[in-house]
Length: 157
Image (cartoon, rainbow, N blue to C red; front, side, top):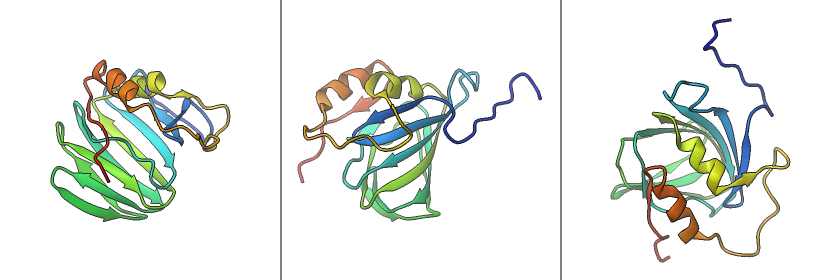
């Protein structure tokens, strides 16, 4: 196999708990020479990220579950088989409307380092025990800045 080839099986690689979800790194920026980061995310209903922009593009494939995606001034519904591509610098966020499992590719890579700092290592390949305290969005905003991500507080409901 070529030296720069990458193979990852289920349960391999780094995984983080964040926002009550499981964030698994399928291909890190280090493994792809910075070309991309690929992650599988399992996120419970109502626990999507705050509005944000980031350097590079984001391509999202919905494996299971449903979500509502806010891309700039548009809102779209997605379910299994839906694919969304968000251009660099576009303000976006999503709200899982059920537990959702996503495969997300970020180009270029590097965002895996944000998840490593903002999350905590997953002790098991399952969603973490549910937290009784709301997420510290101010902390996420500060960490995000270090990785070129411009994150905003959650909009009022």
